[in-house]
Image (cartoon, rainbow, N blue to C red; front, side, top):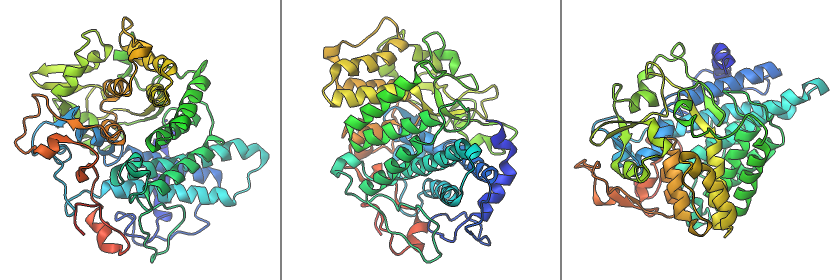
Amino acid sequence: MKRIYLFSIIAGFLFLFSACGNDWLDEMKPQTSAETETSLTTLTEAEYALNGIYDLYREYQYYGARFTFYADAKSEDMQARGDSKRVAKYYLFTFNAVDAPSNFWSFPYKAIRNANNVIMFTDSYSPADSEKTRFNHIRGQALTMRAMSHFDLVKIYGMPYTKNNGASPGVPVVTKRLDNNDKQARNTVAEVYARIIEDLEEASGLMSKARNDGQLNWFATRLLLARAYLYKGDNAKAYEVSAGLLNQAEGTSFKLFTNAEYASAWKQSTGSEYFYIIYSSSDEISDANEFINYLMHRSGYDDLSLSSDYMNLLLEDENDVRLNIIERYATNRDYLQKYVSPDYRVSNIPVLRISEAYLIAAEAAVKLGDKENAAIYLNAIVSRANPEKSVAIEDVTLDRVLIERRKELVGEGHRLYDAMRNNRTIERKGASHTSALLTDETRTFNWDFYRILMPIPRGEMNVNPNMIQNEGYGN
């Protein structure tokens, strides 16, 4: 949405004004600012603050690149194009407790802190009747943003909920302004999910269903909620929410790309599948070379390509439309073109799209033993890829659904989490995985491999005596 950029300066000021005094939460915070309960006073100021969070999501250290490629670079489906590339340490699992990047921690907590500022404003603001719809949507967006960022954190720093019913350490849940001496310990994974779900359930009753490209809406919130329930292992709720979302989408502008549209749809500035897409503009970005499209382009940094494991999977059907968004340049040099633009330096980034809702419904249904409905939702994606193909009810299995998730969602930040939460083994067995730095444990691993989690950044460990490090990374 274009006004996100028009308000960048004002939103940046509000970020400065709303900064808190906790280094352990955000080592990039301004040091001379103070936060007060009167930092936001009007709905317009609250909207400016939300626009600032949308700008934060666009940063290359957040969804602009690193959060988006993270789960694919650490899977079997994508790989670094060299051992010294930007993506290499993710692909090779070589980060340690000293050199682990802080952005996976600091950027979500910055978003959470500023979302909390908006939420606290709405706690005390009494809207006039004429303002209630606007007010509700503001609060709903802030709650969704807080949930989304807590979700990002717990996926990267906490073990899958399904491994031990959420008993392992997660991340600190932050729902208020913190004093300088507040040093929160880690909540359990279960406690983090409880907060995520509570926020998203509340937001669902507030958000507008209207398309507003570049901003979150009710459909985006419900898709995040369905995802949270699925990751938690609550398949009944995951099915209920995803199927209900899809029912609500009928008759709206939200729908799957058709087979004929698929290849060109990724080149458009918006599309029928997108519940939430991040807009990027070369006029707004000074460090465009760090964004995901430049990292994935062979004429850019050429950092990240599809693996032969993925290509072997997709080439099982030579008429799969998804082959049309892959540039087959040379042997083992296959480039995903979901993030495209005329100069390949900046592109829009789809974050939440309707295809995932179909796949969540299919996965939840098959886990509930409902193969008939699982086949309906799965075949919406299978037959879109190739109208001559479908999966018979008796052939629908969890593994078949996970294969379709690999095919459809590659490059969008899902594969590592999908494999780990289902206790599947990642096997990098394709011919393109040639790095001499790959070890037996980074070629084949499951949720018992401690490096599927990132270490808590050293800066956070140094300033917070209540913080415990992830197992395997020392103190």
